[in-house]
Image (cartoon, rainbow, N blue to C red):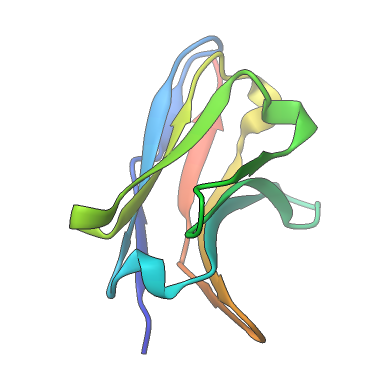
Length: 116
């Protein structure tokens, strides 16, 4: 059973920064890709950023390009999401995701609230 545990969320003012962490219960290179999704109240879950195991190819949603960076630490089996220049519309529950062919794993999420 794969476990993904997110941390690092919280309340931050507009323009501020946060770093989210996702600790996996097994080697992150056992997944084809890992990523971050978010879901705001009343909205569908959407992709924020993802990174492949092979080649570390990254993919970002247009609304975070230039502001968020996804990275990984294989020694810690952890994937990070560095978020900068946060906006109120970034407020959401952020979920970690890990994928293999035909399989997806999810964490329970960490809340990010951007408000003055």
